[in-house]
Image (cartoon, rainbow, N blue to C red; front, side, top):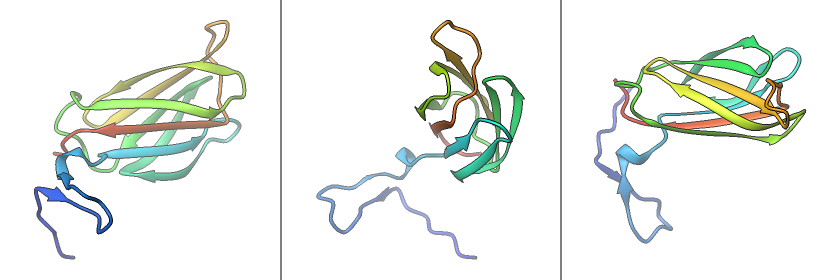
Length: 118
């Protein structure tokens, strides 16, 4: 396996380049109802169903620390409309809530995280 080392990248059709540090460190598209399952992901080794509306994604390659940026959101709700998350060096914990602020599973849960990998 070869390793490509660069400080910036640019697609052929893009006018400008961007920092390689700005590339997502992880992303996840998860089926969050019934038997949970990863639909597609990057740098996610496994996902654990912690409880109703609560999921934990274990990273394949750890981040330097938990000071990266994470955002998430369901694109199709079973019941939920509010979200919360926690990002550490080795995992992302996701919480989904319904309109009454009660924990609720979601059909599609998506998250993306940016930060430096260890």
